[in-house]
Image (cartoon, rainbow, N blue to C red; front, side, top):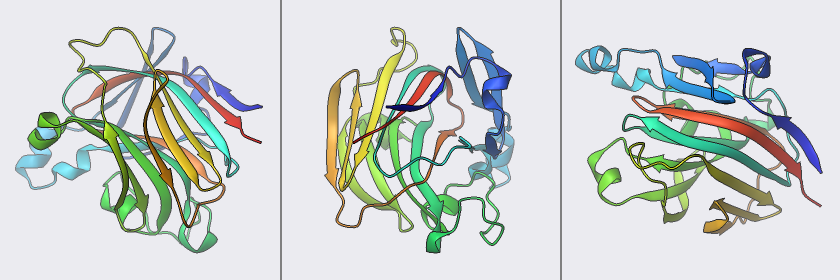
Length: 219
């Protein structure tokens, strides 16, 4: 049963969403273009390059057994794209509980702070070693633990042929990830996370197009 459907096609589709960090949002082609508004070169020169990245949270809290699907196309720039899911504050707190430390888009705030989540990075082109050998990574936080890994079949922006349909399934202890129906990894979690939020994350200078977000409750 579909519990959430969002075309991501207009500003109204982002009512209630929360941006952390310099998220730039535009709309074209029936979807949303996300990019960083920060001057990464200037920040890097000042030793603050990690402040050029952002996370964008959907306002809904989803149950523990769900499938998450969306269309994705890279448009330009070597960077990184990621999905957070089953995200809460640690200790059973809501992700936006005021007792949590403030978040500004810097990655350590998510992987080693007071956020409990799974996160799949499905386009990893930021650093030379990521471009040399391309993988999709699943990590569990807090703790930055790499728990599953698979090959990354996505082309770069120059070779992208339309959109690619991405699908994350979280049912009980099983987590899997697929692109265009090709399963890239599956993970059995001995301590499965429960209900939580989802959020898109990008690392500058990536620009990417998103559309047709759908979340389905699984029996």
